[in-house]
Image 1 (cartoon, rainbow, N blue to C red):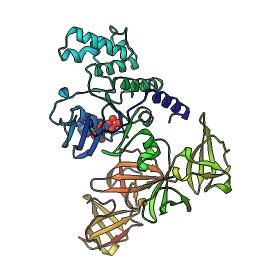
Image 2 (image 1 turned 180 degrees about the horizontal axis):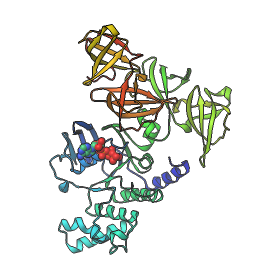
Image 3 (image 1 turned 90 degrees about the horizontal axis):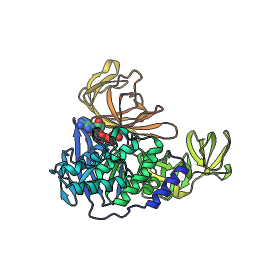
Length: 495
Ligand code: ATP
């Protein structure tokens, strides 16, 4: 994370630049139910997105979530399997990239090394057979806009990374596209240059009033530059909103975790306005949950006020303190849960503190996984009555279950607690699973996995990397089996 000071400075500069905030009902680009699969794997899952005229919109999400694929669909470099792409209200599915009023800036610039700065920027206009005078006027204007006047004759190899990036932006903008697609354009720059370029890009967008569709996996970059942020995960949109909305009102634990720092804890909604957290009844403002519904409780570190022990709604002991320039960051253990607290008040390690959060800053969310346990069905392949064991089939893999035996061919409904799914130490898994989300719950990670036909909930002390694949095994020791399965929908079972 940026320090609060840096964030304030960048936000101040960006606020001065201003931005586009109004939503219209005539978006410049519209994606309707866009689906893309590669090798049978769904990459974009019925994506719907409206991009407004003149806005700076950012696609944000972990590596592999489908951001670049979305840009390629808009740019026309990739055809969706189904769904439509509209540009100014017209379906452009069959329009080739060069006929779309769109241009792209890539992370690796893709400049022509044998051409100088002027020739690189002029390239697109030459292809369009513009006159020499028109080209000259447009190129010189664009070089002035990106602050590269006087560099016309410079070979590309003799430019810094930031200058090369500006040439790439000038080249993409010189043909005056209505929409500019930017795929991690600042990814190759060092931190200082990256921050400067963030401000420059935003200024440029504001000045030219071109719609910018920006891709990044860096949440600070998304928050500081965008009018709106689209948070993506696993081919789906989790939330679309202004940076403030996304930060202050995250739609679910994934967004809260991905954007900034957050304490995300298990709670139970007793009734409207009251949540039970760490055994205490706490006032909140959220409503609309079922009585005693398990929920995720999200509290930002800066929203926890340190008070006297007797005044705290919860109490805790400071484990670690780090000075961060403006505030102190403290790790606090409260009822076995690790909390992160940011405060201008410093409390020494070992101090017992009271913790208070105003009801408006306690965010209650539906859990990402629909049930507390994994509930799924599986068929018995072989029953070994004599040794009280059986073999069941999950996704064409035969798995041995000890201590239970049902007759061959029985369809069982199995309730398996999250602890019954684990990553084997030797790497030999029974199934291969894709990690959809990893949320730290103060004591352990709550991990949602996806295999071919199922979603699984797993708890683990290990850190796992979202959007990667891992081997998993099952331990049925604490599972519950029932042969009363009559068909229907269960929790994570998608069969
Ligand atoms: P990153 O931040 O790492 O660039 P991203 O969110 O932009 O990630 P995409 O590039 O859209 O992700 O890729 C989404 C998924 O689709 C990835 O798992 C990727 O491996 C896969 N993918 C992308 N292009 C192809 C392709 N041409 N063939 C097969 N798989 C592909």
